[in-house]
Length: 225
Image (cartoon, rainbow, N blue to C red; front, side, top):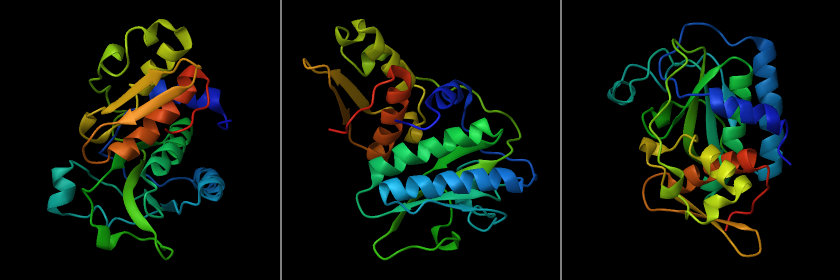
């Protein structure tokens, strides 16, 4: 089961992406809580997520940072792991995002608008960086993003099942690259759930995030099929 699932579900409803941050440091006790959970999740999934504090070079003054509309990013979580870990990065990384929200911090998933060569991290042999999560105290709390209707990502008949619909509605609150929401949920005859991703950048990572949100909303634990 997901640790502190009820708390994370509440954070799903509160959390929005934030790209502009205040020059406030993350308190040691909050950094400790994040690092503790990161170590736990890395151990579960063989990932190499890392919290980097007070490092501004990755989001320094550059075309990429300006293009992504990021400002004052001095802290980030490195989303690293073995090849083909996209879905796992999304599933476990989003748990850190929601934990951060519960600690009063703001976040934003970042796919490519940073200087990869300036990222401060230690990679194992075979690891790759899938992206970063900017983290800190936001200049604002962000705003809701436009989302699809449930019947655009699941069959109408399946949505008649209350727990399934609750999962889909929660999945639609998940952040996705360019707000594309290219995933589809199906309810099988045996009661299991099938999740499929569409084509496009970061869709497998997005699938992992959507899977976590579906589990939180439906209170069901899924396998990625």
